[in-house]
Length: 466
Ligand code: ARG
Image 1 (spheres, helix red, strand yellow):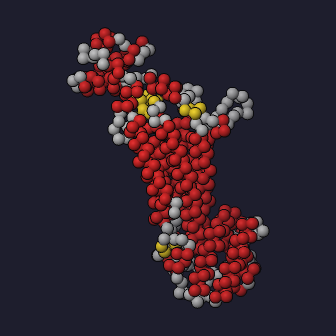
Image 2 (image 1 turned 135 degrees about the vertical axis):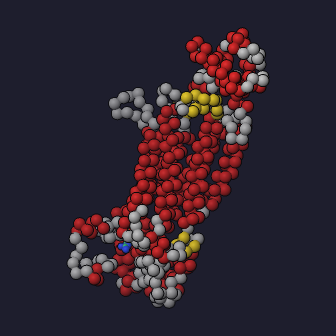
Image 3 (image 1 turned 30 degrees about the vertical axis):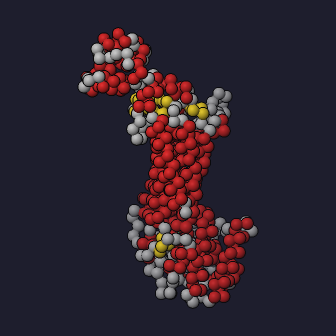
């Protein structure tokens, strides 16, 4: 019972099953650097405020520094039977510096301690993920620039619709990912407040300097209301929601890469280094990176659900249920951090099959809208033009040819307004070049979009990661 921080009022040992059930050390031990940083800031503040002596403050600092060094080097291993990382470090500190160690927890509770550690940890991981995401966006923009003239069919309902450029298509993903990065920056701004000093729920009677510890730990401000500071997990829900949205985008893109790398499409040949084989079928080359990304998006969405359901019935302030926040959040972070470099590598090495894409755009009547527009420019109302072209599409379908393969006489039979300037109007390159509105597929419009996206990326990267 001696090893429990809270054993004083108990007359029986905790049942072994409860000990096992209660402990969170297996997953919260990863927060040891943040736990030590939080304790150092707290102890320095206690000493400055005269709550503990300067000597005890020094001893605590040196003790914590040596624990950090030993944990980093592996000289000290974490006891898997400790209740949690906070308990383990406090016990180890007391083992090393005796009574001074027992003074560390003055004016503090594990409730404000764990919230502080968790927020610090999430800030670090969010910066890491922000930088991995920025790498992916940069790669996407590089590819978009290289492929700004590559023509492929754009789809609606997965049916060929109108010709676009690969640069245009890739920029669509760059927009989604940039919004994801923006959300991470936004997350940091809103949640950059320090719970330390909130105590168990009602602060304390010591002259705790909350501004000092917040500043010391790099938080922008203090999380003021103490009930909210220890009971709040909005920051975990928000972050995992942002990660779920990111995975949702990557999952949609993955679905497309899987389709495109099939022999049926063959718009892309994935690099051998980013593909896997089959144990039985010697010919197979599988798009596992994309499939895993699509599959793992489920875990992150699941974590978001776990967090929201865990929180929805909790009265103020701390409840032990909150311990369940960590595994769900950590799993979401680990999943995204593993996914991003693999996905970026897959994209960077993708072999775009330009001929196949162009050939696909040349079939499937992707120029039908343009023939109708041609007739409108000759004076026909759009609805009539649509009808005439629909009829020509039916003729071509049965003859298995394109609109541009019909002779001028055949075209004129359908509508007397058609002249031989119709053929250039049906040419794929021209169709794409002419869609030059802001945000359109024309190479010039794509290049302009890339420039705006790059500027926004630089601006966001700076504020998201600092
Ligand atoms: N391991 C606990 C958690 O993760 C630490 C806080 C414990 N607080 C308490 N009042 N029992 O939530």
